[in-house]
Amino acid sequence: MLTQLVISNLRNITELKFTPYSGINLIIGDNGSGKTTLLEAIHLLALGRSFRTRSLKNIVQFSQQRSLILAKLPNDIPIGIEYSLSSGLKIRLNSAPVTKLSELVAHLPLQFIPANCHQIFEQGPRYRRQLLDWGVFHVEQQFNYHWQSYKKIIQQRNSALRQRKNNDEITLWDQQCVLHGETITNYRINYLERLLEEFINVFTSLCPELKGSEFIIKYKNGWVKGSSLQQALLDSLERDKQLLYTKSGSHAADWIIKINDGDPAEILSRGQQKLYFIALSLAQTNIANKANGSKKSGSLLIIDDLSSELDIDHQLLVLQALSRTPAQCFITTTDYSLSERLKDIDHRMFHVKHGRLV
Ligand SMILES: Nc1ncnc2c1ncn2[C@@H]1O[C@H](COP(=O)(O)OP(=O)(O)OP(=O)(O)O)[C@@H](O)[C@H]1O
Ligand SMILES: [Mg+2]
Image (cartoon, rainbow, N blue to C red):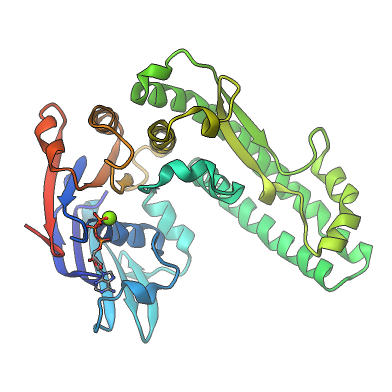
């Protein structure tokens, strides 16, 4: 949870001081007023990167040299991120420099729901894997160790493949790869079982018209069905030598929750697809919070442009579900009419105009 936020020289925001509410913060403003930039600031704080640009030089206000975002977590713990055109990115948490991004991520669990989140189905498996691993990361303390170790081993194996080393030098990595890969798979499968249960609850509350449907998880572990990872690596050795990289393994996993045995992309309307993604994020936040209790500073949920793809009744269902979710939420919209419909929902409203709160 953020108790205070100060943004300087970030895109069109020259200086903005914000005392957020612990529950739902609804940010309303016209196109180009700075709403998404405010969410971008929170994303930068929690993850050390932007959701809009790979190159952080784009975030610095034109003709300025650096952007600065400062915030306070509960118990007055300061967190700050500075990006300067000359010296790059610096992050400080509780007055000490942060060198590992996983440290930051563990401290401030954040789920970002982009305006076009219904595109989850059009994206490649990497996107869905990242979503899944976010969830596993926040409930299984050992997951990050296994995942980082696994990635290093696959890099070494790929490097041996690229250098066209002999079979022994390639398969040298397989035993460690199997050890971490199978642990990762077990974590993911256990997590997905929990996720399914939470997801059904949240999704059917957002989409009452789909109550009574059958929901099942489909998880592909990343290698041939029915085979062990060890066997799959051996069986695909000749193929990997041609490709010059390791094709099968936990890095190739994918998953989806099917509805009435169908692919959501082929069944759901666009609005329902967006609700599906929102339900996944809320379900993940619920699980992370149950697992961590008061150990962390509380989850953040940021939703850019709630009104896109959703009619007013479904937007209200989302806001009601959010008010039941133990997370601090930042939601942007251009729809001023929403404010008149929120009487029963605990929230605070903020107006943004030309990069300022008014
Ligand atoms: N580096 C920069 N320096 C100054 N202004 C910038 C920079 N990058 C982007 N902008 C401007 O910042 C403004 C804020 O954009 P932002 O995306 O936050 O608006 P928004 O309120 O989310 O609008 P919309 O409703 O259209 O999504 C835009 O007018 C954009 O042109
Ligand atoms: Mg925007």
